[in-house]
Image 1: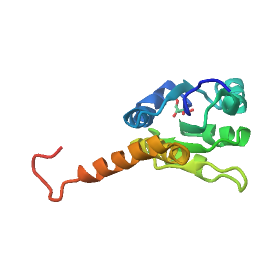
Image 2: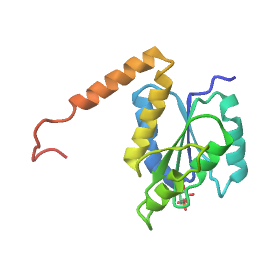
Image 3: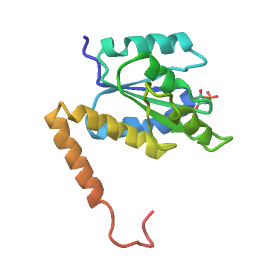
Image 4: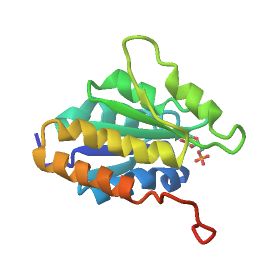
Length: 165
Ligand code: RP5
């Protein structure tokens, strides 16, 4: 076991980074280490296989996988590793991410992918799910997650404003 960060953020394309960066930013806010990689189920299948087969031995604890269109990366990764995989459907141009969502969510029984919402919200929530999993065995992180959630709640104004973005 090496000193790898706990979370791997993988994505099918450079074009997914704009969305997946929201997961990275959320992990940063919680001081959780991660590594982000481009791993395509279709364009680099050997890289995907090697990554998924070796992820646990590399020291990763949770995988966040984002992909769009024919979004097979989260499911294929989940089929190759026992680690929890959270899938983020990236918003596609042609079908607004419904294709991505359907490609990720309908996994056959036995091979789970925790499927998030389409786009930015899904990427943020995938990071928060990863944090919740890791916090089960990390009291300091559990405290940071409690603080993050409390701050998030406190940031919601009680009344709407004309000035708010
Ligand atoms: C998928 O195809 C990727 O996950 C990406 O969302 C989509 C489009 O990829 P690019 O053509 O922008 O590289 O594999």
